[in-house]
Length: 337
Ligand code: SF4
Ligand code: MG
Image (cartoon, rainbow, N blue to C red; front, side):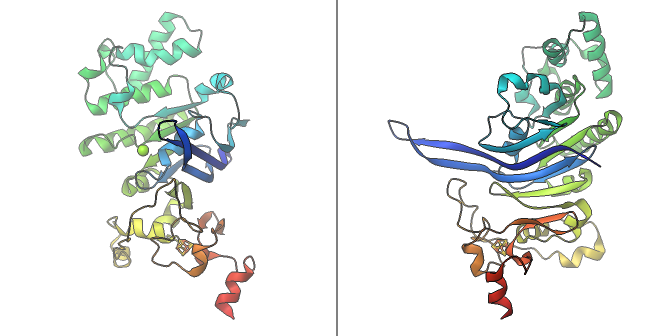
């Protein structure tokens, strides 16, 4: 399969200002050099704890921000440096489903108006055609058409998320960033919305970047999984490889906290408790970002940032434990002499 989306060395740094005169006092490196592809038709899970930069990354990929640097190609078009005014023509291709359907739906608009809005902005359809399209979209996401004139507050959380999904689908996108689309929903509703997203993916040939802190859910939905820590992707692998054979010590720790559904593997899941807190993204450690908490930390980790590289076919990680001995003379000298 071909990549529909390619991201290279994406950085999203936010300036911090301090004091009366709002002097620039540094920057938050929310996303700090992230590279990945999303293949056509796949779901790439992007996981990590809150504050790791995964939501910012998803928004940056859709160019909801002007990025600090990096390259972003979507459906063959390079949009990393494209001016916001020129991104308009790309908007239909790439859409977002937000975490909180309550906050992302205008309470003063009817469901019909909410779903119709992108059609008003980006198409020349007649009013009748637009209403028909809204009806089709409501069918597709399992909302009863007779509720079209109601307002968001009349719906449950799960139904509101269906409205958000219908709106995201209105312009026949190819790529959708789903930012914790079920995190705000009751557990009983979560599986329904995930199943809906899967059905829609198949029906419309969608490609997803699925952002979540919930590793069990991602295991269910993702084709491949990327793990983020402190603004960087530390590991990316096909789902089976990541869950059965995590390479990066951070991924190992995260997964050790997830109940193992396969009893034959359950014995390996001794809980790894990480010490300390995640450092501030305005002041990340020297060397490896994870060196202040890593159970396997070595001398080199505090000095040299590990390369992010393909350690096994399709399995990428950034960790000195997996350095190619031919690459880093200093490292092999220390360990094989
Ligand atoms: Fe741990 Fe070193 Fe690997 Fe970083 S590079 S994850 S500190 S072993
Ligand atoms: Mg978030």
